[in-house]
Image (cartoon, rainbow, N blue to C red; front, side, top):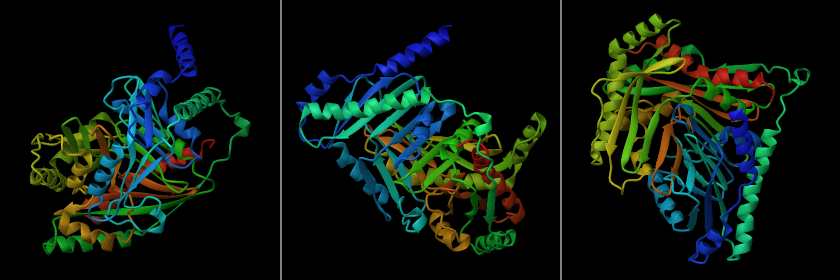
Length: 484
């Protein structure tokens, strides 16, 4: 009874949401020539992914959720786009962000650390990203969305941003109200959703997979090992691409629904640029997060499967911890992160012995790394210090990464690049876009990689990539077998 009463109250609250027009008018009088106004207000708890489902056919969408940490973002529309390419792209995006901040008038109905305007997007793996499949994404792409739902714990916030094309206060408030009313209308549509009748279900869709042969992979791994033996580098990460074709359009929000169910501890993300393809994933690896002056990153490398019983799972974990090959691969990652931060006068703190991060289908060696940083350091600068880590590039980075494209013979695009969000207060978070896929209509390209060191075995590494490809592939199968 209490739950039903609470649900009814929440629905009424959403239907009765209004803007504080007096406060808006008062602040607009102090406006000194800003280009946009951003207004944030508390809303009853909603599921951000439900809004992504409703807007799935519209351009410029972003979804980000780590269910285990009770944090999620859904955003749509693009009022401003920040782009940069080349070796200075992180600095250029950071500089563009500083300029943009000066042009946004921010109003909030409450005091919360994440109520400043939020930008969403990411970076490609390489400094240049010119392949036609990734044309919309570029080497870096961030947007200031028209609407954004942010869920943290039990608290949900709606941010609305509109242009200040003129100084007519009534017109500005009407534009804000228009977006708010659209939010309410979508809520009513979601509330009225009806489960399809079983006899109306769409037939299952078969998935056709194509990929390179094991012999090609064997050649790539052995070539890498020769370069390692010659002292060119100590580790390189190679990725595989699997192409999937469905009989009908892939329902991406449903793919994300199944991914977050299966991987609540991962960063589940979806980025759609313009009306083009979407880039999705469920990655266990955080590149960097920044909250006030606390920076956090992950050392994640070394993998083994999960067991089919508690005893087997525990035994596999002990095998992983005792593996010289995996421990060595993991130490490359931690050492490189520490050195890159130290080079930039950031002193990292971390446990000397790795732990194990268990996902539903795989377990990894894991070292959490943190550091106190000065207010002058931005999340983009930290991302530049760390990307790409040896977990997705190699070690030493400058020696190994130039060989990746030559050996892999695939276009990574945004695979293994930093994706995420940041706000104008300096907080932000980027994940490493592994366990990911590029999707357009009925076509998908799935990516997964593994680290190659001197004693790597091609067959074992092939099996590891199969294990890492399975989450997205399984989600695609489930989504295309459900009503879209």
